[in-house]
View (cartoon, one colour):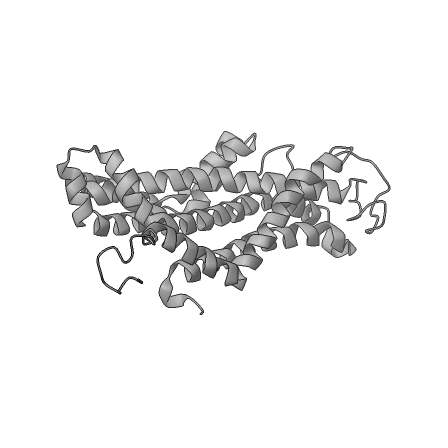
Length: 302
Protein backbone atom coordinates (compact mmCIF):
# COMPACT_ATOMS: atom_id res chain seq x y z
CA UNK A 1 0.00 0.00 0.00
CA UNK A 2 1.49 3.33 -1.04
CA UNK A 3 2.14 6.09 1.47
CA UNK A 4 -0.34 8.91 1.56
CA UNK A 5 1.09 12.37 1.03
CA UNK A 6 1.60 14.08 4.36
CA UNK A 7 1.24 10.87 6.36
CA UNK A 8 3.85 10.10 9.00
CA UNK A 9 6.83 8.34 7.49
CA UNK A 10 5.83 9.20 3.93
CA UNK A 11 9.12 11.02 3.30
CA UNK A 12 11.34 8.95 5.56
CA UNK A 13 13.06 7.22 2.66
CA UNK A 14 13.79 10.47 0.85
CA UNK A 15 15.36 12.90 3.30
CA UNK A 16 15.42 16.54 2.28
CA UNK A 17 18.57 17.71 0.54
CA UNK A 18 20.64 19.95 2.85
CA UNK A 19 20.13 23.62 2.17
CA UNK A 20 23.87 24.24 1.82
CA UNK A 21 24.21 21.52 -0.81
CA UNK A 22 21.25 22.91 -2.76
CA UNK A 23 22.82 26.35 -2.64
CA UNK A 24 26.15 25.07 -3.94
CA UNK A 25 24.57 23.07 -6.74
CA UNK A 26 22.46 26.09 -7.73
CA UNK A 27 25.54 28.33 -7.85
CA UNK A 28 27.44 25.75 -9.93
CA UNK A 29 24.47 25.47 -12.28
CA UNK A 30 24.34 29.21 -12.96
CA UNK A 31 28.14 29.47 -13.05
CA UNK A 32 28.29 26.94 -15.87
CA UNK A 33 25.73 28.94 -17.85
CA UNK A 34 27.26 32.41 -17.36
CA UNK A 35 29.31 33.43 -20.43
CA UNK A 36 31.05 36.33 -18.66
CA UNK A 37 32.36 34.10 -15.90
CA UNK A 38 33.46 31.37 -18.31
CA UNK A 39 35.20 33.75 -20.71
CA UNK A 40 36.89 35.75 -17.96
CA UNK A 41 38.07 32.66 -16.09
CA UNK A 42 39.22 31.01 -19.33
CA UNK A 43 41.39 33.96 -20.39
CA UNK A 44 42.89 34.41 -16.91
CA UNK A 45 43.71 30.70 -16.57
CA UNK A 46 45.21 30.58 -20.06
CA UNK A 47 47.52 33.52 -19.35
CA UNK A 48 48.38 32.14 -15.91
CA UNK A 49 49.35 28.77 -17.36
CA UNK A 50 51.38 30.52 -20.06
CA UNK A 51 53.27 32.42 -17.38
CA UNK A 52 53.85 29.29 -15.31
CA UNK A 53 54.70 26.81 -18.06
CA UNK A 54 56.13 29.08 -20.78
CA UNK A 55 59.47 29.81 -19.05
CA UNK A 56 60.12 26.07 -18.75
CA UNK A 57 60.41 25.87 -22.54
CA UNK A 58 62.72 28.88 -22.93
CA UNK A 59 66.39 27.93 -22.86
CA UNK A 60 67.71 31.45 -22.27
CA UNK A 61 67.06 34.32 -19.90
CA UNK A 62 64.58 37.07 -20.79
CA UNK A 63 67.26 39.78 -20.92
CA UNK A 64 69.94 37.83 -22.77
CA UNK A 65 71.11 39.00 -26.20
CA UNK A 66 70.45 35.92 -28.31
CA UNK A 67 69.72 37.02 -31.88
CA UNK A 68 69.66 39.73 -34.53
CA UNK A 69 68.19 43.10 -33.64
CA UNK A 70 64.71 44.39 -34.51
CA UNK A 71 63.51 41.11 -36.01
CA UNK A 72 59.73 40.81 -36.58
CA UNK A 73 57.85 37.72 -35.36
CA UNK A 74 58.91 34.54 -37.10
CA UNK A 75 59.13 30.80 -36.60
CA UNK A 76 62.40 31.21 -34.73
CA UNK A 77 61.45 34.29 -32.69
CA UNK A 78 57.71 34.04 -32.03
CA UNK A 79 57.30 37.66 -30.94
CA UNK A 80 60.40 39.05 -32.62
CA UNK A 81 63.41 40.68 -30.97
CA UNK A 82 64.20 44.03 -29.40
CA UNK A 83 66.69 46.65 -30.55
CA UNK A 84 69.29 44.75 -28.51
CA UNK A 85 68.54 41.28 -29.87
CA UNK A 86 66.53 40.11 -26.86
CA UNK A 87 63.76 37.52 -27.33
CA UNK A 88 60.42 39.26 -26.74
CA UNK A 89 58.59 35.92 -26.29
CA UNK A 90 60.93 35.05 -23.42
CA UNK A 91 60.33 38.46 -21.86
CA UNK A 92 56.58 38.06 -22.32
CA UNK A 93 56.24 34.68 -20.57
CA UNK A 94 58.53 35.74 -17.73
CA UNK A 95 56.66 39.04 -17.56
CA UNK A 96 53.33 37.24 -17.24
CA UNK A 97 54.69 35.27 -14.29
CA UNK A 98 55.94 38.44 -12.56
CA UNK A 99 52.66 40.25 -13.26
CA UNK A 100 50.58 37.52 -11.64
CA UNK A 101 53.00 37.40 -8.71
CA UNK A 102 52.70 41.14 -8.07
CA UNK A 103 48.92 40.86 -8.31
CA UNK A 104 48.89 38.04 -5.76
CA UNK A 105 51.30 39.85 -3.41
CA UNK A 106 49.86 43.35 -3.61
CA UNK A 107 46.23 42.23 -3.83
CA UNK A 108 46.70 39.60 -1.12
CA UNK A 109 48.28 42.01 1.36
CA UNK A 110 45.60 44.63 0.70
CA UNK A 111 42.88 41.97 1.05
CA UNK A 112 44.21 40.68 4.39
CA UNK A 113 44.60 44.18 5.82
CA UNK A 114 41.27 45.43 4.50
CA UNK A 115 39.20 42.45 5.62
CA UNK A 116 40.86 42.26 9.05
CA UNK A 117 40.27 45.93 9.79
CA UNK A 118 36.79 45.85 8.26
CA UNK A 119 35.67 42.81 10.26
CA UNK A 120 37.04 44.18 13.53
CA UNK A 121 35.47 47.60 13.02
CA UNK A 122 32.10 46.20 11.95
CA UNK A 123 31.86 43.54 14.64
CA UNK A 124 33.28 45.41 17.61
CA UNK A 125 31.72 48.80 16.97
CA UNK A 126 32.11 51.59 19.52
CA UNK A 127 35.54 53.07 20.13
CA UNK A 128 37.28 50.30 18.15
CA UNK A 129 35.15 51.12 15.11
CA UNK A 130 35.84 54.85 15.47
CA UNK A 131 39.63 54.41 15.71
CA UNK A 132 39.85 51.95 12.82
CA UNK A 133 37.49 54.04 10.72
CA UNK A 134 39.64 57.13 11.36
CA UNK A 135 42.80 55.29 10.27
CA UNK A 136 41.01 54.00 7.17
CA UNK A 137 39.79 57.48 6.21
CA UNK A 138 43.27 58.98 6.66
CA UNK A 139 44.87 56.38 4.37
CA UNK A 140 41.95 56.64 1.95
CA UNK A 141 42.43 60.34 1.28
CA UNK A 142 46.17 60.04 0.71
CA UNK A 143 47.18 60.34 -2.97
CA UNK A 144 48.14 56.69 -3.41
CA UNK A 145 50.19 57.02 -6.57
CA UNK A 146 52.16 59.98 -5.21
CA UNK A 147 52.89 58.13 -1.96
CA UNK A 148 54.02 55.08 -3.90
CA UNK A 149 56.26 57.11 -6.21
CA UNK A 150 57.94 58.84 -3.25
CA UNK A 151 58.31 55.62 -1.25
CA UNK A 152 59.60 53.54 -4.15
CA UNK A 153 62.00 56.29 -5.27
CA UNK A 154 63.38 56.87 -1.79
CA UNK A 155 63.70 53.23 -0.73
CA UNK A 156 64.80 51.99 -4.17
CA UNK A 157 62.67 48.93 -4.89
CA UNK A 158 64.85 45.86 -5.38
CA UNK A 159 62.29 43.16 -6.00
CA UNK A 160 58.66 42.13 -6.45
CA UNK A 161 58.22 41.47 -2.73
CA UNK A 162 58.99 45.07 -1.76
CA UNK A 163 56.88 46.47 -4.59
CA UNK A 164 53.97 44.20 -3.65
CA UNK A 165 54.30 45.25 0.00
CA UNK A 166 54.12 48.95 -0.90
CA UNK A 167 51.09 48.38 -3.12
CA UNK A 168 49.29 46.31 -0.49
CA UNK A 169 49.91 48.85 2.29
CA UNK A 170 48.27 51.62 0.25
CA UNK A 171 45.41 49.75 -1.45
CA UNK A 172 43.39 48.30 1.43
CA UNK A 173 41.14 51.19 2.67
CA UNK A 174 38.21 50.82 0.23
CA UNK A 175 38.06 47.08 0.96
CA UNK A 176 38.04 47.80 4.70
CA UNK A 177 35.13 50.23 4.33
CA UNK A 178 33.14 47.81 2.19
CA UNK A 179 33.71 44.85 4.55
CA UNK A 180 32.91 47.02 7.58
CA UNK A 181 29.51 48.01 6.17
CA UNK A 182 28.61 44.36 5.55
CA UNK A 183 29.93 43.22 8.94
CA UNK A 184 27.93 45.92 10.74
CA UNK A 185 24.74 44.43 9.30
CA UNK A 186 25.62 40.81 10.03
CA UNK A 187 26.89 41.53 13.57
CA UNK A 188 23.32 42.21 14.72
CA UNK A 189 21.83 38.96 13.41
CA UNK A 190 20.33 36.47 15.88
CA UNK A 191 22.81 33.68 15.14
CA UNK A 192 25.72 36.03 15.84
CA UNK A 193 24.12 37.08 19.14
CA UNK A 194 23.72 33.43 20.11
CA UNK A 195 27.37 32.73 19.28
CA UNK A 196 28.39 35.74 21.36
CA UNK A 197 26.29 34.58 24.32
CA UNK A 198 27.76 31.10 24.10
CA UNK A 199 31.16 32.57 24.95
CA UNK A 200 32.92 32.20 21.61
CA UNK A 201 35.91 34.41 20.99
CA UNK A 202 35.76 37.33 18.58
CA UNK A 203 37.83 35.77 15.79
CA UNK A 204 35.90 32.48 16.05
CA UNK A 205 32.62 34.34 15.57
CA UNK A 206 34.01 36.38 12.67
CA UNK A 207 35.49 33.38 10.85
CA UNK A 208 32.66 30.91 11.49
CA UNK A 209 29.53 33.08 11.56
CA UNK A 210 30.14 36.35 9.67
CA UNK A 211 32.78 35.66 7.02
CA UNK A 212 31.06 32.58 5.49
CA UNK A 213 27.97 34.69 4.82
CA UNK A 214 30.15 37.15 2.91
CA UNK A 215 32.21 34.60 0.98
CA UNK A 216 30.98 35.68 -2.45
CA UNK A 217 31.53 39.35 -1.60
CA UNK A 218 35.03 38.63 -0.30
CA UNK A 219 35.91 36.65 -3.42
CA UNK A 220 34.91 39.51 -5.69
CA UNK A 221 36.79 42.03 -3.52
CA UNK A 222 39.98 39.99 -3.85
CA UNK A 223 39.62 39.87 -7.64
CA UNK A 224 39.28 43.66 -7.78
CA UNK A 225 42.29 44.15 -5.50
CA UNK A 226 44.28 41.67 -7.61
CA UNK A 227 43.57 43.55 -10.82
CA UNK A 228 44.18 46.91 -9.16
CA UNK A 229 47.60 45.79 -7.90
CA UNK A 230 48.58 44.75 -11.44
CA UNK A 231 47.59 48.16 -12.83
CA UNK A 232 49.44 50.06 -10.11
CA UNK A 233 52.58 47.95 -10.60
CA UNK A 234 52.41 48.45 -14.37
CA UNK A 235 52.14 52.21 -13.86
CA UNK A 236 55.18 52.25 -11.56
CA UNK A 237 57.16 50.10 -14.00
CA UNK A 238 56.20 52.32 -16.93
CA UNK A 239 57.59 55.44 -15.29
CA UNK A 240 60.84 53.65 -14.46
CA UNK A 241 60.18 52.76 -10.81
CA UNK A 242 60.00 49.00 -11.23
CA UNK A 243 62.40 46.45 -9.72
CA UNK A 244 65.92 47.00 -11.08
CA UNK A 245 67.04 44.20 -13.37
CA UNK A 246 63.64 42.50 -13.27
CA UNK A 247 61.21 41.68 -16.04
CA UNK A 248 57.49 42.37 -16.16
CA UNK A 249 54.91 43.48 -18.70
CA UNK A 250 55.13 47.03 -17.37
CA UNK A 251 58.92 47.05 -17.66
CA UNK A 252 58.62 45.75 -21.23
CA UNK A 253 56.41 48.72 -22.08
CA UNK A 254 58.80 51.13 -20.38
CA UNK A 255 61.77 49.71 -22.28
CA UNK A 256 59.97 49.81 -25.64
CA UNK A 257 58.99 53.45 -25.14
CA UNK A 258 62.43 54.42 -23.88
CA UNK A 259 64.06 53.03 -27.04
CA UNK A 260 61.49 54.51 -29.44
CA UNK A 261 59.81 51.28 -30.51
CA UNK A 262 56.67 53.21 -31.49
CA UNK A 263 58.56 55.69 -33.67
CA UNK A 264 60.59 52.89 -35.28
CA UNK A 265 57.48 50.83 -36.04
CA UNK A 266 58.52 47.91 -33.81
CA UNK A 267 54.92 47.06 -32.96
CA UNK A 268 55.86 43.55 -31.79
CA UNK A 269 57.79 45.08 -28.90
CA UNK A 270 55.05 47.15 -27.24
CA UNK A 271 51.79 45.48 -28.33
CA UNK A 272 52.28 42.08 -26.54
CA UNK A 273 52.89 43.54 -23.03
CA UNK A 274 50.11 46.13 -23.47
CA UNK A 275 47.71 43.47 -24.70
CA UNK A 276 48.77 41.16 -21.85
CA UNK A 277 48.04 43.71 -19.14
CA UNK A 278 44.72 44.63 -20.77
CA UNK A 279 43.72 40.98 -21.14
CA UNK A 280 44.52 40.08 -17.53
CA UNK A 281 42.84 43.05 -15.88
CA UNK A 282 39.92 43.17 -18.33
CA UNK A 283 39.23 39.46 -17.95
CA UNK A 284 39.29 39.77 -14.17
CA UNK A 285 36.69 42.54 -14.25
CA UNK A 286 34.55 40.49 -16.65
CA UNK A 287 34.98 37.51 -14.31
CA UNK A 288 33.91 39.71 -11.39
CA UNK A 289 30.75 40.81 -13.22
CA UNK A 290 29.98 37.16 -13.99
CA UNK A 291 30.41 36.18 -10.35
CA UNK A 292 28.09 39.01 -9.30
CA UNK A 293 25.44 37.70 -11.69
CA UNK A 294 25.87 34.15 -10.36
CA UNK A 295 25.74 35.03 -6.65
CA UNK A 296 23.00 37.68 -6.94
CA UNK A 297 19.64 36.01 -7.69
CA UNK A 298 18.25 39.28 -9.08
CA UNK A 299 20.89 39.34 -11.81
CA UNK A 300 20.75 35.69 -12.82
CA UNK A 301 19.70 34.80 -16.34
CA UNK A 302 17.36 31.83 -16.42
